[in-house]
Amino acid sequence: MKPEATQIACLVNMEDPQSVLEEVKTVVSIMIPDFDFEPLNRTFRDVVSLFHGQYPGYRKCNTAYHDLKHTTDALLAMARLIHGAMVNEQVFSEKDVDLGLISALLHDTGYIQTMDEDVGTGARFTLTHISRSILFMERYLSENGYSREDIESCRAILECTGLNVKIGEIDFGSAQIEMLGKMVGTADMLGQMADRTYLEKLPLLYHEFREGNVPGFESELDLLKETPGFHEMTIERFEHELGGVKRYMRDHFRVRWGIDEDLYMTSVENKIKYLNYVLENHEDDYREHLRRGNLMDKLDQIEKQRER
Image (tube, rainbow, N blue to C red):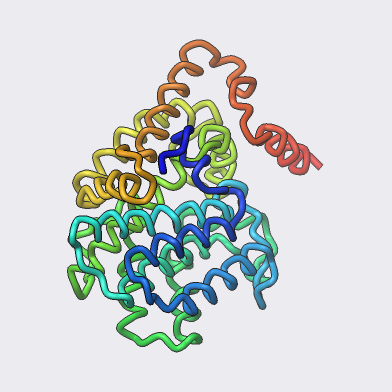
């Protein structure tokens, strides 16, 4: 059945983590009808607890851009890519799918502060969050009975989320794990850039970058101006370093929803067009033209807290 509104946010309630999980499970069941969801369910519960500050030894997530929704966005994008690949007769075992989805869930755990880390926010770890995520993943999977081989596979997959990583330098162990790594790297970016409120979240990202000492940006507006160029760089990375696996999205939407279109790339392109319009016509009052999700109000609150 083809819905009237062909937007990602109209297919699934992306604001509700449980709704996202249910769609992931629906997609996986199409691929592998007898899939054992217990490991995925457990990891999902634990990651939600981690971001909510209910996981032993860790504080609540306090990064406004790299939040739980970004993680669930990446999870669903990952499931969709795997499905699209299997529609194209790519072969993944149940273990492969489990490791790919769990890697997506754990890929940004490095932003979460431990109870001993009480200075600033998790944005302090922007430049080191991948290595921190890998450490969390290794400990978590070991505690939950995964083998050393599984853990090494997830390490390789998580390394693919680095924007400057050279895929050819990673030891994947198998062609399937390499493809899953490329998919996680793609899902990470597609999930955030296709988010309905991506443009509104960019000023929040700037403040994370500032706290994390990420060079190259002098202001929110500077980050917004750099985004069209970042988009072009990302498209190039999708096609070359990440093996063009984003092509599988279209087949997912065709089979799952009867929509012969890559809704992620449509959403991304529309956002870049609107951003260019704002930059050309409303540079002096850009915040007034980024009103989805009341995120500018959230940004105002963050700024007021910093002034205290």
